[in-house]
Amino acid sequence: MTKRSVLGVLVDATTYADATGRIIDAAESGRPFAVTALAVHGVMEGVHDKALGARLNSFDLVTPDGQPVRWALNLLYGAGLDDRVYGPTLTLKVLERAAATGLPIYLYGSTQPTLDRLVPALRTMFPDIKIAGVEASKFRAVEPGEAERIAERITASGARIVLVGLGCPRQEIFTHALREHLSMPLLAVGAAFDYHAGGLRKPPPWMQRAGLEWLWRLGLEPKRLWKRYLLLNPEYLARLAAQKVRVWKAAPPQPSRDAPATFPV
Image (tube, rainbow, N blue to C red; front, side, top):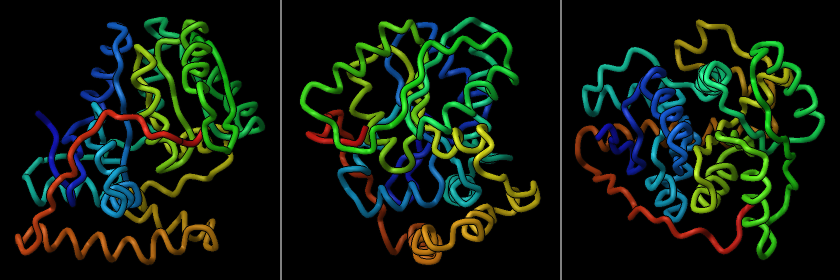
């Protein structure tokens, strides 16, 4: 009921409290629940790749990670959102609730050195956190039967929530594919692993409020990110304006629960 089309990608007009509550409820109920937080880059990936867009539109919860996505919900639908639902912050709120309620978590993705820094950092922030398992990305395509084996390891660990840090759109493809194998929430959390492990510096709050986090990230990694921000951001604004004045109908791709034949692990 909270989903709205932003350039054809369905994003939920939600808040931190609502999103956290829905995730914890799914964890306590033991049911599949796919979650991601999309900024402009994630939305545009879904626009350009219709198969990915269809997968995103089958997610149970897609939060407005970036301020421009929140602004789009307010502009197009009068959502009245006062704040975005930023992936790294949502991660901390979910972990806080998980620690308080005794729900074990599983960390999947990133590199082993990052995970080695992340685990003690999380235990410092949340002394009661239960970390059931940790598994670094293999940085390759899935092998036949591997999805089932990954799901078996996660289930056997006793985890009730999985955090997936593979980067967009790899983490969304992985989350979509694993959802059918796991009776628990999977959260695609983007750069949350790197931020909370101390590998990435956060921009000052004023830049976050002004929707300028992309500029901060561009300054830190210009060679890797220049195409993402300098090409996709103007295209996003142009398409948003076209959707607003109804000269372009952003039709959502048909939602699909079919797992891709190959996906990143």
